[in-house]
Length: 229
Ligand code: CTP
Ligand code: CA
Image 1 (cartoon, helix red, strand yellow):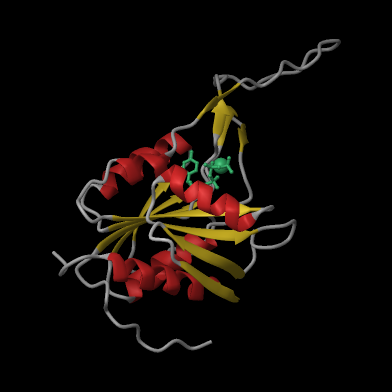
Image 2 (image 1 turned 30 degrees about the horizontal axis):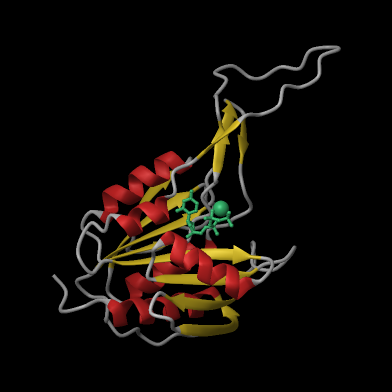
């Protein structure tokens, strides 16, 4: 589908987008990971650049072509993603957390490959909590008026869970997707509701991830107070 030139309504703005899924290593060859492709985050980065923003894309384990005109920072783990997002957020007008950040990581990392032994049961994998980057960015806004956006994939009670999550995270907008086995992950299509901390609800019909991205930037632009700079 051809898109006309976008209005440069994000000119002079710096936006940070996280994309992909973190991987939490167990040993040099194994990790705990998730199925996020990074496509929604890349669509957000590309559409923001098309609308004139300076974009920092923090990408966790993605295998997608580099979007043009975007500063790409590659990370692996949740801890690395946190560091990169906080650094870029310091002078950002908006932060959009589209990455699937692992809630837990292995409590310890084996520097050598974990081996099995005859007659021995495997040891359980102990996990610890990862930092919550979205909650942290929301609580400690690096500049006044910074707009913070989260994403949530829910399988049940989508709106009620979304509202509760929005309050818990303290962000301005939460994009809630309903997911099932084959929906959303790795697909070019998406269907969502964007919940606002101000009580607003914006339904985004089934369509390309670029359409959802444009709706997110419309809502962000409307919340950015005053002129850029
Ligand atoms: N997120 C984050 N840091 C984490 C976990 C999640 O920044 N450690 C962000 C995600 O990038 C996303 C939002 O928080 O924008 C919601 O993620 P989700 O996994 O739905 O939220 P959780 O609070 O982890 O809730 P759940 O127990 O349902 O996984
Ligand atoms: Ca989670």
